[in-house]
Image 1: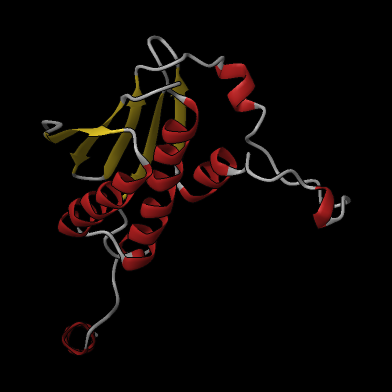
Image 2: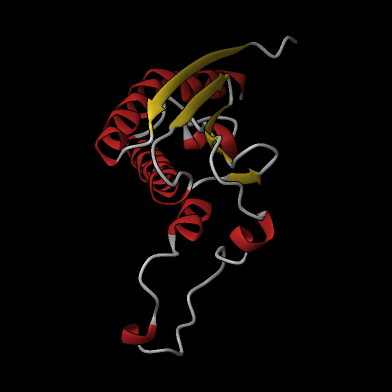
Length: 166
């Protein structure tokens, strides 16, 4: 069995006005690959959060973000990368975690929930900072929830066939 993958790449200015372009691009690719509406919405939110992190934190002046999508039969990998100021991965990973529900909402810091949200919405998230920061987000494709858990739903033809065997 070959592991065929389609690759798609874009280089986009790291500006807030282009985050919508990335969302639409990911939406189109995921739709074509057969993802459900809910999964597509999750991917759009996750990729928007990753892009917003680039826009807000990667560059002091101007720069670019790189969007890569790797589409396989069973999953899509969405990579949002920058070549800006490198951030320690350990400090990024500290932001992935549940919200402290014992604190009142007024004490929660504004922002800083993007990586937690990405991690919650996607099936797998990896972060690297070799040259800039790259967030690799994976969403597995479940074309039909039934096919994942049972052999199939019996049809009337199956029931007739079963009756003839008895």
